[in-house]
Amino acid sequence: MITVAIIGNGNVATHLHNAFLKAKNVEVIQVNSRKLENIPETDVTIIAISDDAIAEVSAKINNSFVVHTSGSFALKDLKNNTRKGVFYMLQSFSKDKKIDFSLVPFCLEATNKKDYIVLEKLAKSIGHKIYKINSEQRKKLHVAAVFVNNFTNHLYKIGNDICQENNIPFDILQPLINETSEKIKELSPKQAQTGPAIRNDRKTIKNHLALLDKQQKKIYKILTKSIKKSSNKLN
Amino acid sequence: MITVAIIGNGNVATHLHNAFLKAKNVEVIQVNSRKLENIPETDVTIIAISDDAIAEVSAKINNSFVVHTSGSFALKDLKNNTRKGVFYMLQSFSKDKKIDFSLVPFCLEATNKKDYIVLEKLAKSIGHKIYKINSEQRKKLHVAAVFVNNFTNHLYKIGNDICQENNIPFDILQPLINETSEKIKELSPKQAQTGPAIRNDRKTIKNHLALLDKQQKKIYKILTKSIKKSSNKLN
Image (cartoon, rainbow over all chains, first blue to last red; front, top):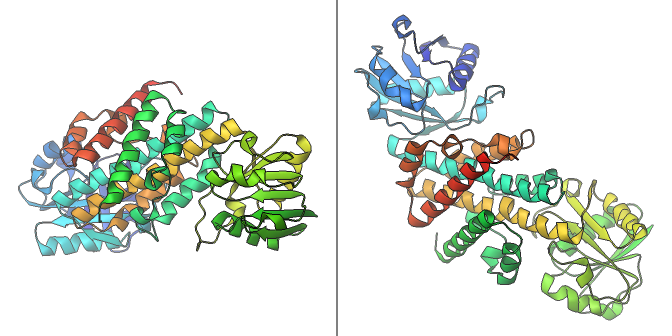
């Protein structure tokens, strides 16, 4: 049995609490971060609150093993005087959307092997994709996630804008969007690259630029340049 | 029964030929574009060759109804002296990858209603997502596809590069990539936007920029700026 206290009331805290409630061998309570005086001692205390508040809240906790769930907060910046760790789930959590934890990558970090094994057991109680990721790697992973999630979504928005302006239903692009994300399960993104930039098809690039607004043009140019450049590199 | 001749030997021609062979009520032959003297008269003659060769090949065809399969070639630029049309499938075709035509959007265009109905019947014999798209719209759609397919794939490549440099397995990002592409089936891309740019979280943006190389930094900055700008607009 692993006993867990989750500090926080946001999406991550709530989804995690619900998942642990269903797990065998885990006993869990959820605690409001404004009522820290009420935390019982547990095997793992998970701070699942916004980055800005982690330092302050962790400073007030005396429990023996305190971990946070942030992608960009270093382990060493936890301010508790006891053992530290990280229990980061690389997934976006929305209030109303159910999370399938079996698909969620758990990125774990601890300062000693015994603590790491406890986090691993805890992650395995609700999921099965477990990665050992240190604070330096996690920072990089977080920025990589911005590219493949936030920025990709913005490219979808540009696609949507172009469709709307031309009375084309956006769902016409959905199969292509799906295929693009599926393809890289079999090919590396470098192998999967297609289009006028990688073919250096200047005529098509010129025609495309003529159809775009100023902001779209800038994005088109810089991404085309970057695709061309990376095709000249070995990796 | 619709009779069809497909001109070309590339991926599109071959996949289309195989699909029509299995369709009820379609009789199809495939013709090498260097042997145009051998095309029998058919209800629809489909030129499925590279954009650069469409004008030249279409000029040599006397069949009564000639269509091409290109995303960026205007209907009026076909050089046959008979009826013209477009039979464009918005999907990327690879040699070894089977195509599920039931998922493929067919973008159809013809100069008269009767011809359009023939193309619609033909598309329905192998698929069911049919869109009436004129040449102007198709040009725009083609550039929108570059954003959601080619450019998105390049963002995946940047994510992959960051992972590789830091000894992180790229598959850790796959669930997030999937979720990003799935989410816009329910939300508009504007509603689905998350991350430091839309939150105007300057601290995180600054931290991220410090982790990137020159080219990545440029892309990060311009996409962040574009996300911020578009969040101020109404649509």
